[in-house]
Image (spheres, rainbow, N blue to C red):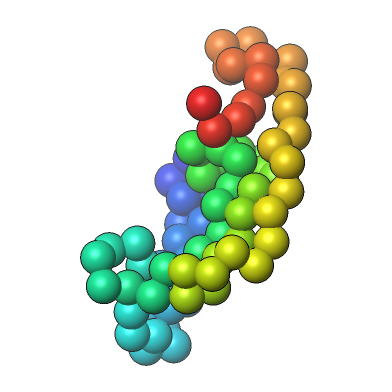
Length: 85
């Protein structure tokens, strides 16, 4: 299942940019720094928990910022809270 979630995540991020032939897309040096920072380090939690969007940048300029929220989950063998730390 994790591989399918990763494919969904890539479909709307890096693969979408490739299909549209966007130059300067990504987080590599020299790219235009347009990004959405999600409040999780795990792509699965972006989709499963509808992770909080913490920052939105377009060409390096901060357009929106949201305070971090605490997500609590009750699943065996999983962390009880989800965040950037």
